[in-house]
Image 1 (cartoon, rainbow, N blue to C red):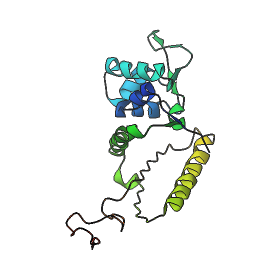
Image 2 (cartoon, helix red, strand yellow; image 1 turned 120 degrees about the vertical axis):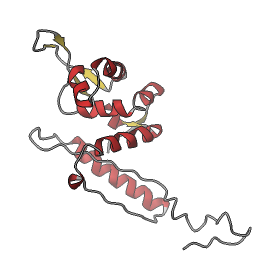
Image 3 (cartoon, rainbow, N blue to C red; image 1 turned 90 degrees about the horizontal axis):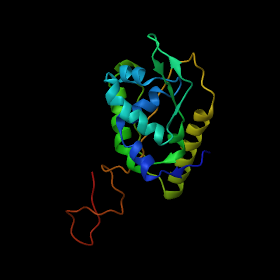
Image 4 (cartoon, rainbow, N blue to C red; image 1 turned 135 degrees about the vertical axis):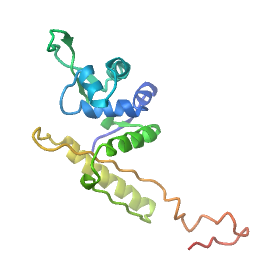
Length: 183
């Protein structure tokens, strides 16, 4: 299983942008220039350059061998380092969710496979579930990707279910000392 370390403040700030998270995905399999990144995002290259530089400075993107563009201009392609997979960044959950929703909006509904599951697990079972899920994700993340295969994205969010509080939690409207009643 991949050991994760806590992100530094600078790393966490770099990942706290849905635009930067999309840039990392764009550069995951193939090096892309700032101009190519901007085109993919439908933005002006000047507006994406700041974000690219932030990702470079924090080690999430790595410059590749310089090349010449179609008009002879110097271009530097960038490749994602996959560093973000090795970090624990709980504060970046909201930008990650926004990125997921932005990307999902670009995919035809018939191509989206979704599922939703409600569980009641003890602390030990939840720890086991998290470890097994992380192990599965690490296994596939560590595999050498097939460049000719379709690209897939996975988003998983584990959260306490606000619709089904634990039996130990009391109903705010219940009389003191009386157990909560739920439908």
